[in-house]
Amino acid sequence: MQRMQVSGLHLFYSKGYYNTSVDDVLKELSLSKGAFYYHFDSKEDFFVQIIENLLVRKIYSMLIEPIEGHEHTLDLISSCFENALETAVHNELDYGFVLSNFINEFNGRNAKVMKHLNEILRVWEVNLVSAIQRGKFNGHIDRHVDAEGVAVFLMSAYMGVRTLMVEMTPSARKYRFMSQIRHYFKSLEAKTTSV
Amino acid sequence: MQRMQVSGLHLFYSKGYYNTSVDDVLKELSLSKGAFYYHFDSKEDFFVQIIENLLVRKIYSMLIEPIEGHEHTLDLISSCFENALETAVHNELDYGFVLSNFINEFNGRNAKVMKHLNEILRVWEVNLVSAIQRGKFNGHIDRHVDAEGVAVFLMSAYMGVRTLMVEMTPSARKYRFMSQIRHYFKSLEAKTTSV
DNA sequence: GTTAAAACCGACCGCCGGGTCTAAATAGCT
DNA sequence: AGCTATTTAGACCCGGCGGTCGGTTTTAAC
Image (cartoon, rainbow over all chains, first blue to last red):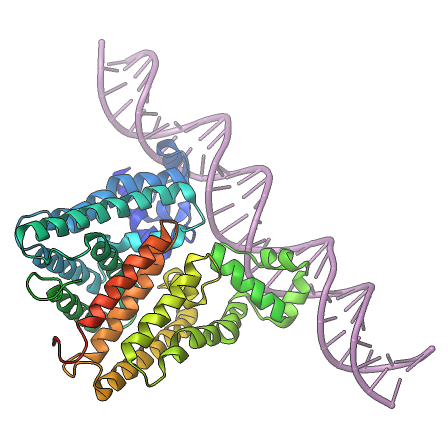
């Protein structure tokens, strides 16, 4: 059952949810329909459980936890992004943004699933905002900076670069992206510029 | 035939390519299978023609042409983004980034289609890079700025915010996003900061 | 060893989607 | 009007997919 979810996630990620049949998942593990529908009500239910059991935790440990420290916030964020993108470069299952793909796939097509995915986004956003506010409080970040704005901007940029990195010179793009992120961060630091 | 393409694009955009059947397109226009397969070899061919006939032109007029002027490059880009995102807010068919959605859908699933979509991206990127270089030449942009880096960063951010804007307070996010973009641009201007 | 519950098997159903094919309609031309 | 070429109609085929169901095996408790 755990195995089903793991290989289900891999397949859904690489081939897309609607483009992956239940049989595909079962073939991978040499299991039968019976086994599947004993454990899960439906394909959708299966996917929701994958989100809850695998996705949220991985994303939490990859994008939330790493920036909860009390050191220089912007450094935490940039090395967190750096790590996440590095796993993406190596074509590994980039839990960092499996999410982005799924959001694109389910948008306006499956409200139920979208609720779960949006919830993850929301948590990430809240966490980014509070990290930035912490940075302002600690004096690392200029106090005029709009925390919500920066959060939206960072999420956008990160999700976008993930799309751009697939199939086209990923490591070069990662490098360029990260250096711009750092440049952008420099402009947010205290005693340098203001918003 | 033109009508087929137009309503095909609308449906593919709103429901997804794989989630839209040929019959759906035909139902919309009260046409029959015969009419469709007389004009197009396959569903895929149909889609490729939509890309070539509708998508590239619209994107060209929305994201390429507007930044080809010789005024302050960064201003051109930001008002170009502003316009494109504004149409997205109003749930209109945002040709600006229909592209982003499709790239996400076809990534790693259909190489043939991806070739066409990547080509559009490539043109956009080249155009951004040369716009930025023009800005450096004109003295509006700091000469230390990495034009390729900025281009990748802008494309990422733009594509990402499009994802983020769907289904969750789009206009607030657009506003925040744009103000961060402008802030970022300020840090690229000549005689202020360097990379 | 018996028994009941948990887990699994795989044939089967109904539906839908892409694509084919033949016949009919329509348009264009003389 | 008559004839050809273009365009449509829609019945049909086939493969795949989500889901069901009756039955078999495995597990575990006593």
